[in-house]
Length: 259
Length: 269
Image (cartoon, rainbow over all chains, first blue to last red; front, side, top):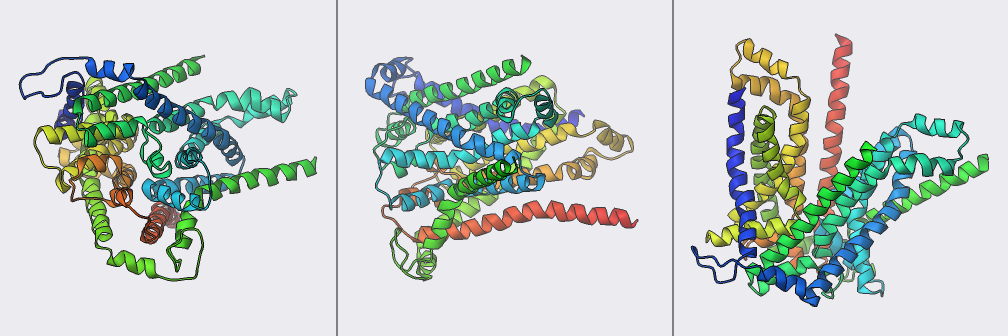
């Protein structure tokens, strides 16, 4: 069976060059001063200090988190009933609904956002509302599918038992279905909140350039200002926030399951 | 009671129809307006095919479609082959090696796209590699492989190890055991891995934006960089929607038809 392991060598080489080395480069740039030559590096934490001490940058971080948070809340509020109603349909209709929900996911996000730009031209509304419509639109199917998977897995007997014990529909929902669908909500959140924090295309296309989110900031420091060190530091901060919160949600999820 | 129930059914199906309408609204909208006789995106002024004609005369747009398809095809083929091979190797690897490789493999999946994009751009810049179609393709292969591995590996781990062992004991070469025993069993997973890889590559904007050269752009970059509203994009979107729908229907239908056929075959014998 050892000969099989050799099959991973090309891939290990590939991830070494294209995943590990590039991530190390971000780290290296983030903790050094600009003007590095190939061999001399000047270690510094100034890039991080600059980010966290400047109220403008903090505002950008706050806006990114706020927009992602509101998007997630709307996705849950709209998505949960949808997932619940889908789970009550016949098996066949459920498959069809899931297929109908997945289909638009395969279509280029830029093109869909561009279409929204056309639709929203008909309405006079605040650009922030437009951004939310675009964001909720983009992420809603992920939320519905995650919650639906959790509800569909539920043991129907539990509900029957709950009715037999005298609970009405509403009580059974609150005491049985809702708590048992929490893992679905959590995985929905990881699929919505985390990518939403870093999104920068939708705010730019629908917000009409009024929005500087953390993604736009990174873009600016790399492509306009040419300050790779500071840009790397912001990227690293964002990666840490996202991977950290993912780790945390996983941990909470596991603890909840154990209980 | 009966009345209450039918009202509830009416309410739930109404809600689901509204959600579907919301999800399909932009798609239907571009389809309708791709046939609009005027440049307007707000009022429909008669049927015409001018935007389709425009699209086929727009060299920049055609070039971006060509780039997108070319990169997606190469990235899909390379990442499917490399990813499947790596997944088979990993399924037989020691637990510790497997989990380390998988942690690294997960990085591009968990990381925000923009971080992956920046990291690859830094790599190319500091190695003084000019960003071009080649760096674009290399980057796409890099973010596609993890998805192939994540699709294929769980299927491999469900397989009965003994079958491959038996093939080896019966004198099959490892190559034969691989192609005649293992791969046929995981074929559906490889296929869905390839489908995911293709769609990831086809739709990517952020990573392409940072890793491709100034003179190379895919569809997403073209749309992003457009200065003025161009209704030809509606025509392009409509064509893409049709192609995606056909591919997805086929992908869902072929296994179903195959099942039916084999069931029939089994019944006859």
